[in-house]
Image 1 (cartoon, rainbow, N blue to C red):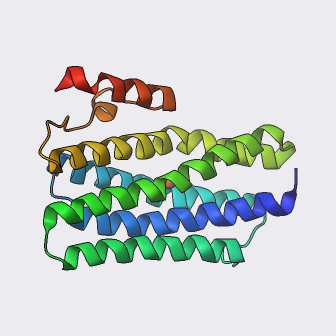
Image 2: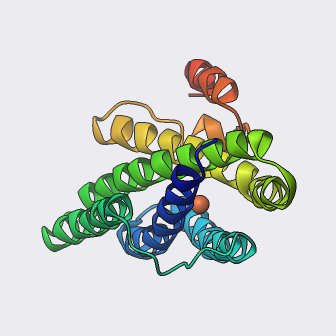
Length: 197
Ligand SMILES: [Fe+2]
């Protein structure tokens, strides 16, 4: 494995989690649905913990968490852009529309976050010794939460959009009701939505 690119992955992972804290803080202000607001409050707390976990992992690998790389700068830029997008939607004065924007922004952010952790899990399998141990411990701690963040928010985004179109929606979404934690589970939950209306 290429050590330098593994380091890059960790810098990007830290920046993604730091951006996630800002994104959830703003998304909570956009939430109208009380269940969604509660869910995002929980995810914000978990994301704050993920920041700590990545920082601890970096310490074990003797990486400086302040290191800037071009890739990390891009991750920062995208995160700040998602916050700005939600601010724009809030300023436009339509709360339901701002909530939809926030749901999309969280989904986009969590797609990158989920990918990072999937890759950290893959790297943990190939790495050796103390590096493998550090990566595995971090991955074991966050994996289930990252699955939930992505799949449940994807469900919320779809159902809130369906509701906005004036069609019957499943709220909270099937992904949440069925406690989905895998891609297969998410596909099944989506397929079952018609029977849940
Ligand atoms: Fe996360």
